Length: 264
Image (cartoon, rainbow, N blue to C red; front, side, top):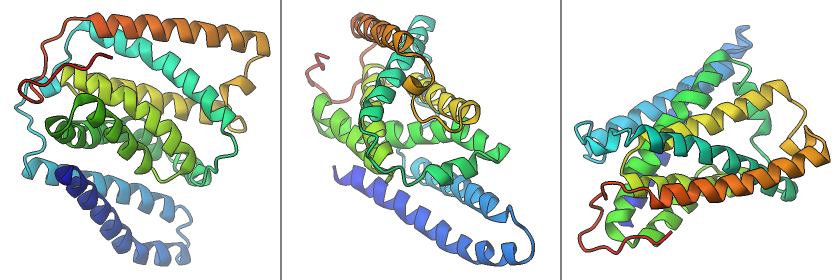
């Protein structure tokens, strides 16, 4: 647990440092007529923080590009299952969040502003998921799996992933989504399925934000009958794909010697 918190503290320290450095140009450039400067400063600060954190993880030995299993696609069939399970999870989480609509979304305006920039779209939809999987699964979840039982490691990892987003609505959504990502990583030891799932999730979020800017939930887009059909299909698909993933024979990652396998 200590190693996991160490990684988180370094991550937060880097973010605070870069934010502090960015404060000066963020104050000066708009005064010089650069109206879009703040958006670019935020995006470049995010990218710089991510790159510096990746350097730390690499130098600290938390990630190793030579580890074949970490970057293994596992199999075409498993990647297909990863894609299939993503859609019902997104739909059902969206419904859950619609029931928790009272939760504040303090980052909504900031998110919209970032998506007004093409680089913001690339960062959120593609680069962000890759970085977050390397950090939260490839480093933090890996450390937790080597120290705790699979269930405990996965739950702690998901909680960290949700809380680190700070935004109340994302804490809930990110926490549940983190359970899926950590479980997939536990099953495979590979980052690629999680990266694929994460990219699909973020890309769909960007897509719906652009196409339906005034709509927060899927149930507000479709009629009631269509929604319940989609809900039923999502439940069936989730159960079916979950079972296929659970029963798929994979080379077991050596998280801890003599560790009992997770039964879920």
